Image 1 (cartoon, rainbow, N blue to C red):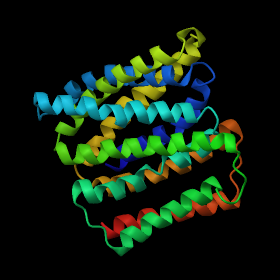
Image 2 (cartoon, rainbow, N blue to C red; image 1 turned 180 degrees about the vertical axis):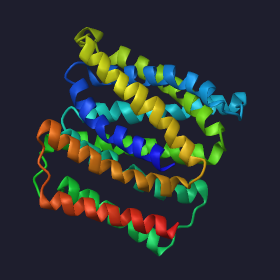
Image 3 (cartoon, helix red, strand yellow; image 1 turned 60 degrees about the vertical axis):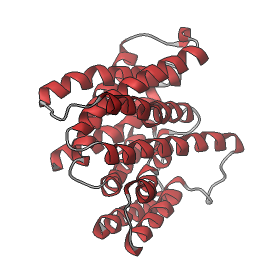
Length: 284
């Protein structure tokens, strides 16, 4: 399990740099569409390779498709639209508020009753996110506030899918439902992109193909499969909290690739987030 988790956080941490590169080659909604399309195409044969059980009913398949609208279509669409104006490292901070949203949504949807330690850890995590993003310590241009709202809404949408999946699907059903939600999100993003963004702005070539393969095959099909495989064994809120560690990979890779500086304030935020992970999972 440790090896799978390490692969997941590394790939997802590097995703932000590949998204930043991909957005120079392709409009955001088309890039999101290509990502989920390649993810869906890869996820289906993965089910057969893994010999998953738990066939889904028609109702479960339709539900998974519908959950793919907030879970991947809105999540990836708003994320990539928002990252046009927000640097990759800072984008990762807002996207990774999703573990905290997952904790809060687990109360009404999954019936979890977090104690004071878990709630305190969640608020410490929010404080760490604020420090890492430097909100309140540096001036955020008004023109960027809309992008910040898009990124936070994207994180919330992904959390909705997480807790609903945990409630509805059990065991290998989670992996099969993942393929169906990718199908639903592929259709949604295809329509969204076609109706709003000219495809003529796409810069076709090997660089775009490489970005799509990383984001779709590794960052979506493989990591989503790992994520829902782990969710079979762990609670949604505890598993999501561990994925705060993606922030470290994202901030480091953004420094190495894009030259984004990580200052003492952001480092303190990262430490706060790590303490929050410990408190959330100790309480669990």
